[in-house]
Image 1 (cartoon, rainbow, N blue to C red):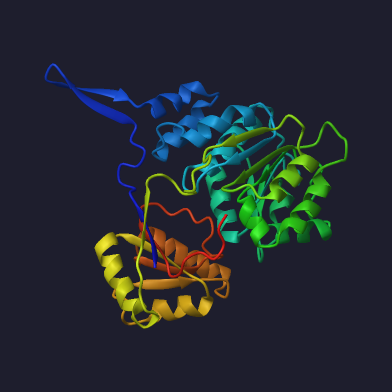
Image 2 (image 1 turned 90 degrees about the horizontal axis):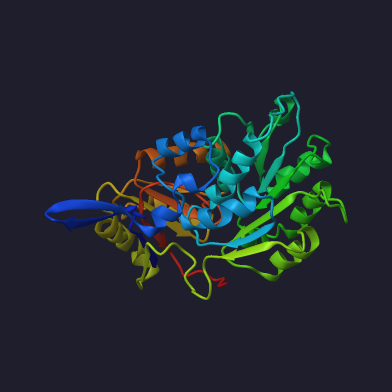
Length: 364
């Protein structure tokens, strides 16, 4: 097993407390000072929405990327998973769009296109955009979704490459008005074989040699060669590169602790139950990653696993997957057993423990 223990309680504390003359003096940390809302061109409506979600200041990746994105610069950003990456492009883009007069026409084409590798990540990114704005229309396209959204008009479109490409080829989606393109989880899109589809889609939004091509933003934990090929082909020469990882090998947030445990496959379910009890407790949330759908189903139904568990993978209908995720988020059951692809990009609060049933086979 590979265990990831998440220290979420008190995550990114914004206050230091010191005793001065017998009294407790409270001061902001440097991180909180740099991320103060007053440092950025945020509307009061957006600030209110952020505060309602418990956000008190911007995280480092958001601080570093906000102004370049807001100023319209092309950008490649490397950041660890779990550091607030989605808001780092969603915040400046929504503020930028809301700062200009709104186009309320029915059937209007999107101004922002966000491409992501999986439907779960697509729904999460779309939800994050919706949580930041009440003025803009946000649509999410992935396999199986009906095409009704653009009839009413779209400002921000989030989707998977396959579904977006289908709509374009069927003349149901117009990208000529796109002003901002985001490729999220670029390294994983490459791993899943989406490179060709992504470039086909970009071909509809970009004109060779034009100075009016969309702003291009690439986000990735690693930067494979394809990232720079895309940058050379679609980005302006003076694009910015922001690296919040550097030469460090850890690609996850620094609040994460990793452990490894050897175990025979015949004992796995029983050992899993004990590990979850020790590290996650009676009411904590745990996500278990498996390599295959069969493995996920068998583990979820194994009587040796003492906790309530449900599986999540590509053979489960989308509607049921959404019900399963909703149940996990709300605490109906404590353990989610998923294949790696199905669970990519999930954003679930208060997860105590993540377990991989075998070490990753691909290392970046």
